[in-house]
Image 1 (spheres, each protein chain N blue to C red):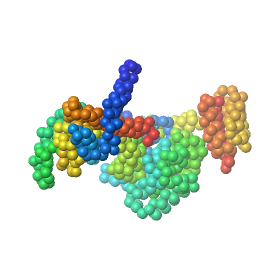
Image 2 (cartoon, chains in turn cyan, yellow):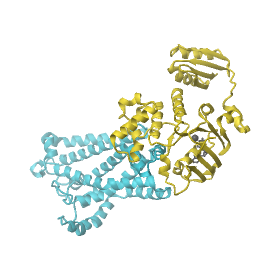
Image 3 (tube, helix red, strand yellow):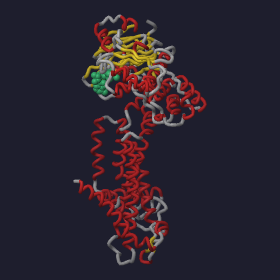
Image 4 (tube, chains in turn green, blue):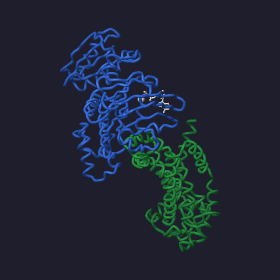
Length: 283
Length: 329
Ligand SMILES: Nc1ncnc2c1ncn2[C@@H]1O[C@H](COP(=O)(O)OP(=O)(O)O)[C@@H](O)[C@H]1O
Ligand SMILES: [Mg+2]
C-alpha cells in the first residue's frame, strides 16, 4: 500500500519533470516573455505566441466563474441555512450526480442547446455577430454548470462548519436570520468560500472536452464574450500528435501542458491549505 | 417578592419524544438575580432557551405553555421574536466572540438595530467596555480580532456586547464554567453590580455561585421544578428533601478543615511547592485550606492540584487581597 502511495505521488513529479524536459527546447530558444505575451501564433514560421490561448483560457474560465459563483453560493446558502433536512438530503445526490456526468455529455448539451440558443435568440436580440453561436459565452455557460457541484458542495461543508453557537449569539442580539447569515456566518466562512471558488476555478481552468466543443477554437485574442476563443487545453487536445513535423511544435504544446499543470497545481494547493486550516479550526 | 418580570406558566418542552421540561410554572422577579440550579441534564439550558426562543433553532423541538414578559407571550406566534430577543442579553457557557474585531463585536448589535453614525457607535463601544472593566485593557487595540483576547476578557466582551443592545434582562448559561477563578470572580462582581438595572437569570450547577449571587432560586430536577423561592429560604431551610440533598451533596456548610496553610507573601513557584508539601503530609480524603495573595497562584495552584489528582472544593476571595483555596487530597 505504501509503495502504491509513493508511486502515485512520484507519478506527479515524474509528469512535471517529463513535461519540463520536453518543453525545454522551446524555452531555450524563444524568450519566455515572447512565449507568454506575443499574440502571433504561426508555428510554421517559428512564431509561438501563447497569448491568444492564455487569454482564451482566462476569458472562458473567468466568465464561467462569474456565472457560477453567485448561483452556487446562493444555492448552497439556501440549502444549508433555509432548506429542511428532507430537501437537503434529496438535493445532495443530485448535485453529486451533476459532478459525475462525463464532460463530453456537457459538451454535447452545449452544442445542442446552448449554441443554438445563442445563435438564434440571444445574439439577434442583442444585435451582435457570432460565428454560429460558438464562442466564449457558450463555453462559459457550459463550464459554469460543470463547476456548480464543486462550489456548492465545498461551500456547504464550510457553512456547516460554522458553529451553531455563533448563530445563536447573533440571533440573541436581535439580528434577523438573514442579518446573521450575512454578517456572521458568511464572514466566518469567507476563507472557505474563497477556497471553494478557487477549486471551482481550477476545475474550469483545466477542463477540455466540453469547452473545446463549443468555444469556436480560433487562435485570436478575444475582445468580447461573443468572440470565439481557443483555450490552452483545447489547443493541446486538438493539435497534439498532428503537425509534429513542424520544428519545436511538440515542445510548444508540452509547454502549454506544463503551464496548465502548474497553474492548476497552485490553485489547488492554495485552496486545500485554506480548507485544512478551517478543518483544524485555525481560521 | 418584588415585581414579576418573567412569568412562566405551564411550560412543557420536548426534544423529539424526550420530555425535558415538565409543567414549569415560576415567576422571575424584576431587577434581581435568579439562579436556576440543578444537576446536569435537568433542563436548565432548555428553560433558558425557551425564554429567548433560541430553542426554535433545534430540530424536532416542540413546546407549549406561556412565557409572559411585560405581559407579552413570547410563545405566541404573533409576537415578534426579534424584538423579544433585543430585550434579552445572552451570556453563554463559553465566550463566543463574533468573527470580527473587538470594536465590531460591541457595535454589532446597535448597528443591526439601525445605529449608523460613527461617533454614536464609538460612544457605545467605550461605554460598555468601561462598564465591564475592559476598556483600559483593550482601548489601544479595538480593531484587533476579538479572538485574540484571553478567555476571561472574551467573556467580559460578550457581556458588554449583550448590554450594548440595551436589554432589560440578562440570561446567563453557566457563564463562568469555562473561566479561571479570577475571571469568574470578575464576572460575578459584574453581575452583582448589574442587578440594579437588569433582571438577571443565571443557570449554574455551582451551588456556591448561586449562594453568592442569587436573590431567588429555582431548583430543577429531571425537568421539574422541585422548589423555588427566596434564596435565603431555599438554601437555609429547604422545604423539599431533594433540595436539601442536592445542596448537601455538593456543599457541606461545615467543611471540616484538617489543615491550614498561610502562603501570603509567597510567590510562584514557592507557594505551589508549599501547597504540594502540605498536601503530601495529609492523609487521603483530608481537607487543606490555603490562603494566598499572589494572583498567579489563584489560578495556577488549583489547576496544578487538580492535575495531581486532588479535588479543589472552593476558590474564593475573602478580602481585598487574599484568596482561600480549599483542597481535598
Ligand atoms: N438538542 C437536543 N436534542 C435532544 N435532546 C436534548 C437536546 N438538548 C438537550 N436535550 C435533553 O434535554 C434534557 C435537558 O438538557 P439541558 O437543558 O441541556 O440540561 P442542563 O442545561 O440542565 O444540563 C437532557 O436530558 C438532554 O439530554
Ligand atoms: Mg446546560
